[in-house]
Image (tube, rainbow, N blue to C red):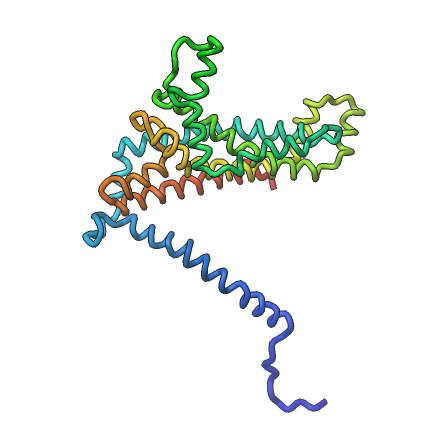
Length: 299
């Protein structure tokens, strides 16, 4: 065949497939940018402004400098890390133990047990907070039962005391999210070859040793994932602080997200200062996630 001297400018099959893929992805990509990334950039710009409404002016790092002196924000950070250091390890340990128990082939009604443990996760955040608030009210069901059983001589103000209010929030978080993490561990356990456990039993390893030598190492990627998600969620804790204790007593249960909400809508609107606090949370989540990836991912 003779060449006519003209270069063929037609697209190859791979290029056409690539353009087709981008054609279908473009609407979703634009929507994600408009709903997520653009507001994030706007919030970053806003965090460098001070003032209210149309009177906002460029303040540079004033909002971030203010954070260093804001004792309420320091209290909120301490509260968040208190929940994180206690609730996250307990919840994940309970979740992996429950997943191991419910993964046994000879366990009867395991489908029912799995559903019952996962159901709290399906409860609306506001609804379950109100349930716990009702249970642990001064004249609530918990005080009534404990008083009738003679375990306490007088009713306890669970949500009105610093020590007990934090404990109630931790109990509520564990009740709400343990089943959610258990599902991830169940999925991971079902990918582990049963022959590994049979070989361990032949070698004389008991259930506890097999758990630490086989289950935990092979679930490392899943454990890493659930840890990062749990840390992320705990640092952004909002509903429990608002609906259970309203941040009290004396800001002892106030979280960073709750304080951002107060700064934005309850106090004189300070959107620039609230945006600065939001980026502090973003930086904390990014740093902790990076550390988790470096420590937990051996690849």
